[in-house]
Length: 74
Image 1 (tube, rainbow, N blue to C red):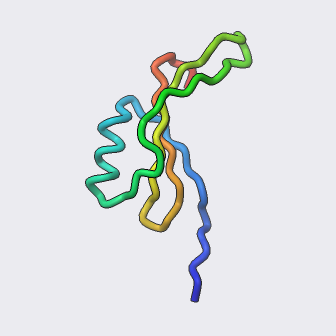
Image 2: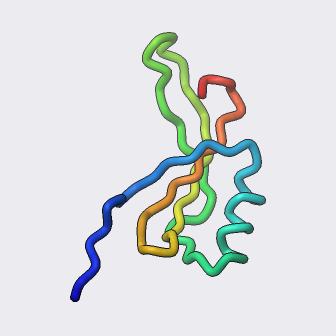
């Protein structure tokens, strides 16, 4: 019987991206995208919104996104 995921993608905000990703790796999760900067656009101010993101697979195969925002927008 093939298992179907009820959750495909979950995004979590963190103040400490490296520590959070390290905890996931130590728990046996697979990193699918290492930490990288990402410049979004703040639609209210039209200013750049610099964040950092990383992705890993959760225990049931779900994709988990970690987002670190030092600007205070989130």
